[in-house]
Image (cartoon, rainbow, N blue to C red; front, side, top):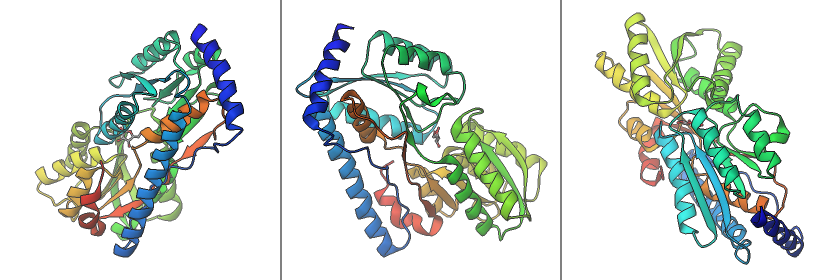
Amino acid sequence: MKRKLLSMVLCLSVVAAMAMGCGNPKEAKNEPVKTSDAAKADDKADANDAADADDAADDAAEDTSGDEKLVVGFAQIGQESGWRDAETMSIQTYAEEHSDTIELHFADAQQKQENQIKAIKSFIEQDVDVIGLAPVVETGWDQVFAEAKDAGIPIVLLDRRADVSEDLYTTFIGSDFIEEGKMAAAEMAKLIGEEGKIVELEGTVGASAATDRKKGFDDEIAASYPNIEIIASQTGDFTRAQGKEVMESFLKSNSDIKGVYAHNDDMALGAIEAIKEAGLKPGEDIKTVSVDGVKDIFEAMAAGEANCTVECNPLLGPLFFEVAAQLKAGESVEKWVKSVDGVFTADMAAEVLPDRQY
Ligand code: AHR
């Protein structure tokens, strides 16, 4: 508590000295690559955006240098997907590279909400400056968030939302999952000529990434494509193994599946294995659309075994620490720092693959 008081006094002087010099954090941009020229232009823009976020995070981290370190607790979900590993790497690498100004306390909850709650309680006891959380599911956070609020520690939600009243968390950094689902529906419709039977592999039950990607996709199909029928939809828990297992059972009970929509690339990659083992050609007999944009799906697209991915940027480390430093400095931040997602199709894969960062 002594440290917190000292920190508050120092923060006030930092805020006064900065005199609102730092604006709100920027949107996390993640534009799609469209054509070869556009690809180069977009790549440059992405590189610039990444560099900007990095510079801003550096500046923000430096703001604490005359002070004590920025102490952050982060409760990660686990290691269920390549995307999750990339997000963890982005957070840990950034903290390591800035260890002179940042102290990161990192907890891997192994897919269990109770472990994330335990981690948050321990961060509160350690009196960290900011708590970051990627909530495994949306509900069940009210009590522990209220405890953090009472202790004066801001909560930053990273990549997934929590279903709590707005005063219990400070900001959400991440994508519009409903929009991702809508984009996926439009791509699936194009791939199958706007008609036919499709199946859906859902993410973790109760996770905002699963609920919203399903809502966006299903609503768009129902509203705009009356000749497309979602004949089966089941959770594969965002993992490759369960994606494969569920696809195997879909294939056993249905002979005329034209497409599979998976809430993440890992489940799509599992489904691709199941399709091949069933003697069919993924990418041709059964089209695939998934979300994330991990390297493995680009490799599958380049090999003609996958058709489309809606990118969701996991490289959120620099932006997360930028926001955390701003909160420590007593600045206000936007309630939703939104990532902009793009769509990548198989014809772009070979060109884009060498530059994929995750
Ligand atoms: O919350 C983001 C989702 O979580 C990613 O799409 C998925 O791969 C991860 O497990």
